[in-house]
Length: 76
Length: 259
Image (cartoon, rainbow over all chains, first blue to last red; front, side, top):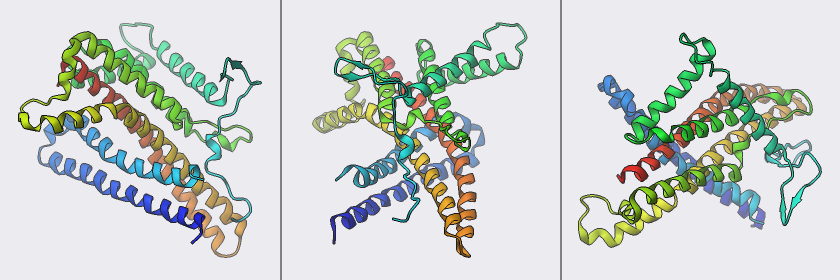
């Protein structure tokens, strides 16, 4: 395997993390909706917490993306 | 690599617009990034100053500005709580600077040849400075208000004493990582969106160039995808600005109230 090929495979492996973060973000919004539909009156007050959970789980996917980009464009 | 390949990273290129200006060892040339920051600042100044007529019955413009201020006031009130009012101007500037520069970044002005918008927030140099500002304010406020008691931030309430050697380093690391995660999140979200748009745009061009039966089909599908992704980008622009402002005010809450 050439170095370039190994680089591309590594970047592709790093991109798996983005999909895993999608699971987390879906879980955050899914759980929020589940709770919000049971008690719609309390839903608006929890939107800040919803976005904190979203931000925390999204960050890990974004870091996976950064790793992929670093492998593709920065590592020589 | 086929001919006519479009480099998705080219749009993030920072180039000086005038001839290079040097101050000591630093290059302080006026770049396209700086130009767009000036544009964003100008837009924000015009937007806000248009609503400062202080009429008793607000017109449309003043109602808009009052809504903006009310939104930030509400966020600061719920997440910082008591004593948070004085941070509202900072959170306001932060939120609307990020929001407007995100939105200016996705303006489709590139259909006019030679004109190309530049997303200021797609550079970690810009977002990191914003994040370090927030972090510095948290540190200054925390130490000024509580002195050395500010370090009790690293000791959660109700944790058993034998767990302290583990918890304190973990809390310390998670505290020190905050500015990096804050800046990185905004930078990566914007960069990823712009790369995605550029990649699908290059699919349209290459599909049309390729011809044959399949080429136009790919081009049309990619174009539909661009429309969808653009709508998603508008949502991401707003969410990332909101998340940045919200997390900053939460960190300020820690500094003001210590938990």
